[in-house]
Length: 104
Image (cartoon, rainbow, N blue to C red; front, side, top):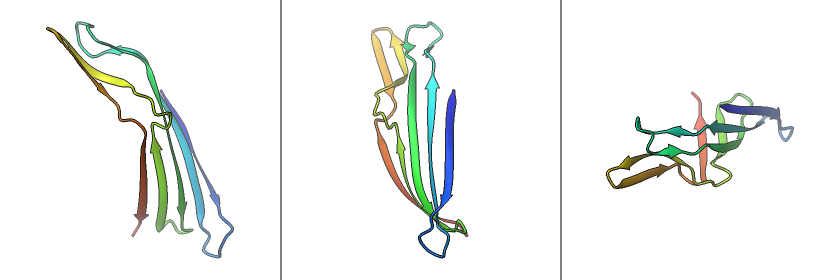
């Protein structure tokens, strides 16, 4: 399940009509198995991601900051089990990205 929102509002700081955008999204995954034998259950997990950006009034330029896994959880999402192995793969911890976008 995924829920989210994006909000945009004008910034009255100049005559170029810049905009402020921000949003959050929440993702939830219920418990599941990664193999047909049900040898490796993956526990339920959720993720919270967000962003904030400033854009020009004509949307030609945008500078943004995005954060993924804002709660910094260590969630297992896949793996292999059996014959003496138990390998698990986790999603990345908290990540930050800065973007500069230009539209032509």
